[in-house]
Length: 228
Image 1 (cartoon, rainbow, N blue to C red):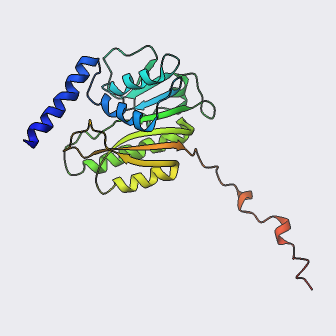
Image 2: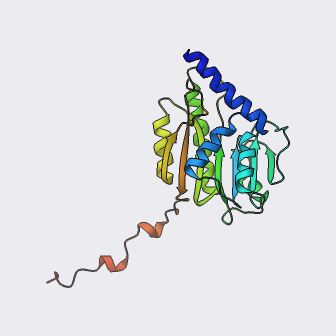
Image 3: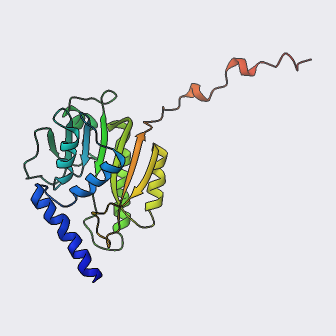
């Protein structure tokens, strides 16, 4: 009976996606996340890393509206027709310079950056190392954030539960005011997938300079009250 219930749940979101024009059932995961955490806002800019097959692009485009912009990047081509406010780029996000992605929406590094970064990437392998590969993918996304996500921006990325999950979550928490794991109802019960949601990006930390560690001349002077 439990197996049958899982199949019914799968069919529910599969049929909904077909009926409502989404490329895949994964659209309902992002819809639920956004209803709960408000990571997509009208008129904002969104970057979807690993955007194929395109269902998250569709949801993001709806949520930001015609004045917003959505950029998707993936090694695979997205064949499904996307809304007019979506721009797609074929490539590896780790290799493409940040300015290339920002130029697609009229921004620039150090200036106007994305308001939200999304990633529904998952390992292509099917073995005991899947969670390690998933963690590596998430860390590659975190590495992109200082050049692409504006301070105060939001993050949603998929990760598989395993020994690295709590470590990646803590790494994300250090970068955001608030970050936690969430599993949408649209995820299959048997799936190990979780979604890390980061709210209010703290932004890149200022680089340390030689002067920042130097002792000021005033601090070297003796205290007049204690000096004989």
